[in-house]
Length: 400
Image 1 (cartoon, rainbow, N blue to C red):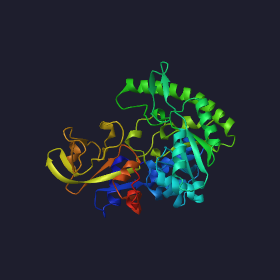
Image 2 (image 1 turned 180 degrees about the vertical axis):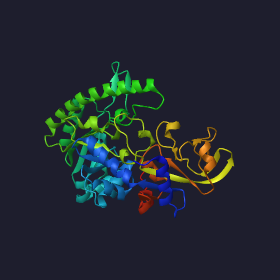
Image 3 (image 1 turned 60 degrees about the vertical axis):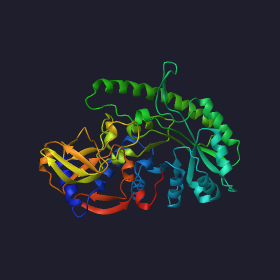
Image 4 (image 1 turned 45 degrees about the vertical axis):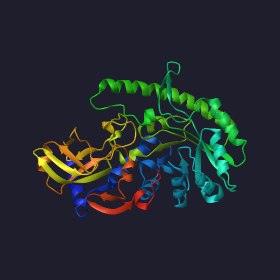
């Protein structure tokens, strides 16, 4: 692995012919991260979370590698677009209220065979049926399990507020409802343990918090493994030919893959490795997706100003949702301004070595959200840009 200084030098050389702001993906790092995900999955296939990639060319690249199979999408419109583009196994990870999309799905046998939709409430089936507009294709359905950890008799909940379905009987009841309803078929079960997969267990400089997170995650993994196995048995009693049970996320690939009940793993952020995935004890990825902002001002000693950069990530607001100045190392935000919409002052001794027109390389807090800011990803191999690929935005697609 190259040193940060060597990486900065080759990124600068590779993109010297391009004007910043710009975004790159280091393909050597991308491929190495893909290999690490496969290693941690221990032989179970990885379904790629498209929201963490948002570039068709890179989805195609990773799905061509052994160990990867299928896409986990984030909107119905995106799912249909990907299916029309030739991706033949697309699992929509969230319920939808896109009536036009459901009409298209129900009316097209190719799309209906390729796309699986998420359901956790009979009302969602009603909405789909009202949206069919005469379409008669059978809709493939995945049921979602609530993976949250409940403590103190349910008075404390740790985990995302997603599905209302938690117990084996609830999932089995919905499976029976779907099975008894013409035009639908249960093919899968999903549970995303975000409080394990998406929360780093080694936050820098916070040993007490790290200890608490590891205790919580240990309890959560143990409880969920037992409950998920019970849910899968209950659902398979209704749907013996269940095609898949999806679980996990970048931060919990190995642990989730160890569950016998899980047949495939979901992961996506681990390909780009944004800053929120720095603080894990179970793996260490290589930053693969970066963006560069040009120095446009030198306000004083130890200060430069770059153009733009105010790209906060989704989630609860906080400093951890901001991009981080990455190369050269040692730069930090002005606490009075932070990451600015049009200009971003950066402080630190490395600023004195930066000239007007030089680049500062940043890492986004989350993975695919970077692609909503750029229409092109320049693909770097060594110290050359070997190709450029449009993001979803670059193809005129803004699904959320």
